[in-house]
Length: 220
Image 1 (cartoon, rainbow, N blue to C red):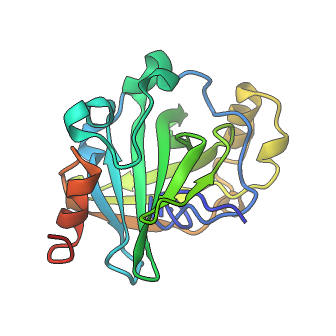
Image 2 (image 1 turned 180 degrees about the horizontal axis):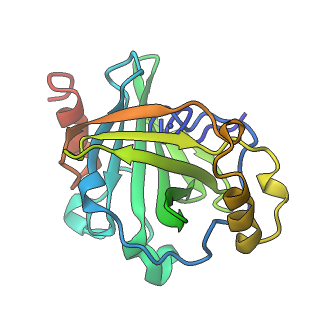
C-alpha cells in the first residue's frame, strides 16, 4: 500500500494520502500554467481526523526557497526548474507513537472543464522523514489527483476527494490522463471518500514554526 499525502484524499487534503494503486505515471498537464491560490496557503486539519496533532501545511515557493524559512526537510531549488512558482509545497505532519513523521509533496493545479484538480507528487527521492531522521524513498514519477470540490466563501473550509482508479498507471501520457479523467468526471465510483479540511491558520512561512501554531502548548 502506498502512503499518499493527505491520508485518504490531501488527508482527501490531509486524510488522503493513504491509498494503494491509484497513481498515474503522468500528470494531467505536462507543464503547469495556473498560479497557486494564495488563500489556500496555511495550516489545515481534516475535520474527521481524531488526532489533533495531525495537520497539513501548504506553502509556496517563496516559503520553501527562502533561506530564512527553510523547510525542515530542506529543498533543492534546481530540481523544480522554471515552474517552481506554480507549485504548492505541501507537508503532511502525522503523529505516530508520540513522534512526528513528515511527508513532503508538490502539487499544481489543472482544470478539466469546470473541475479543479491538484496533480500531487512526491517532492524528492526522500520525501518522508521521521523526527529520528529515518527516511523513506518515494518515486517522483507517480502522480495522484485530488479534485477540489469546493472552498467556502471565507476560504477556510476545503472539500476534496481523491481519484481512486487503479488503471491510471497504464496510461501513456498526459493527454491520455486528461482525457481519461474527463471521461469519468461525473462517475462517483471514480473517486474515494470525500474529505473536508478546516483552516487553523493562514501562517505558512516555516514548517518548524507551524508545528507550534497547529498545536499550541505542545512545542516550546
